[in-house]
Length: 64
Image 1 (cartoon, rainbow, N blue to C red):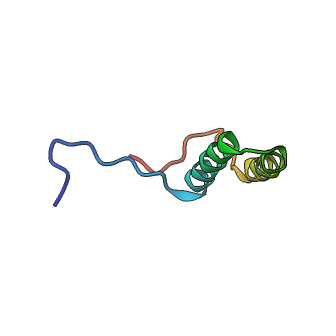
Image 2 (cartoon, rainbow, N blue to C red):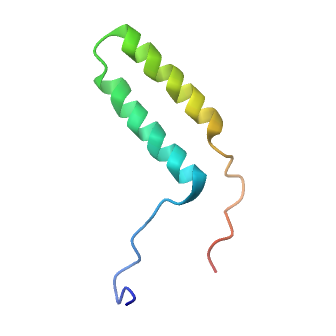
């Protein structure tokens, strides 16, 4: 059990991590988009998802 000398694998948890991952995926899609219509569609989704991102004003108290 345990991780020995290795650091624990970093894991994005909670809503913020999920939204960040979704935004990364959308940005990649935007960069690979071939036409303007697709870029517009994806950028709208990016804007929408950015509004879901919770503010990170204070560090979350999960670690001790």
